[in-house]
Structure formats: structure tokens, C-alpha cells
Amino acid sequence: MSKRFSSFADFYPFYLNEHANVICRRLHFVGTLLVIAIIVAAIWQRNPWLLLLTPVAGYGFAWVGHFFFEHNKPATFKYPLYSLIGDWVMFKDILIGRVKI
Image (tube, rainbow, N blue to C red; front, side, top):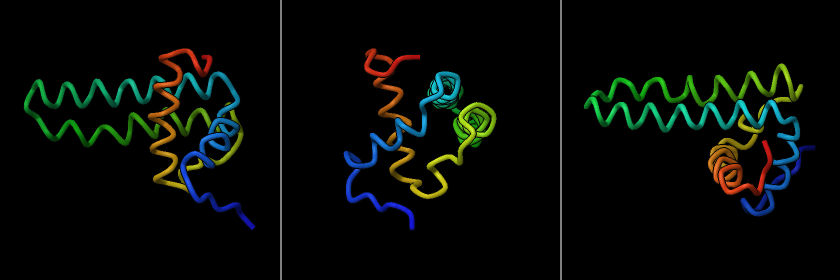
């Protein structure tokens, strides 16, 4: 039976544990950074079609990290909303030095 989380605060330690491999975390960081760049480019160029690339950039890098380096299934498959929030919180935590890459 899979664990159910009642809050993001309960989920986030699990999320970090699922990202123990430094290469996986780096790929998540790069994917999230690309998502930001794509959003900025879409606004700058006034081209909303560019936003179609955001899932490819975000999930593509993350899934490579999980399947080839972490060797686990992305938490997105069981906890899509908490995982999306977790990506952004981990990105912020990497930027401020709370999570190491």
C-alpha cells in the first residue's frame, strides 16, 4: 500500500529522498531553469506556442534523472501536484544553498 500524504510539508522530505542522486537533482534544476527561460522567451516574443515546450523541458530532464541515475519512478506518477510544487521548492532550495548540487 502506498503512503498518502496529508500535506506538502509531510511530502517534501519524501520528495527529497527520491532525489538523493546529485545528477538527478542537477537535471531537475536544469529542466526547471529551462522552463523559466521558455516562459520568458514566450512573453518576450509574444509567442504562446513556445509554452508547449515547458512540459518537454521540465519533465524530460527530470525523467532522465530518475530513469538513468536515480533508478526510481518519478513521484509525479503518484503525487502530481505535490511533485510539481516539490520541483519548484527544490529549485529554490538549491538556489539558496539548502539543497546541494
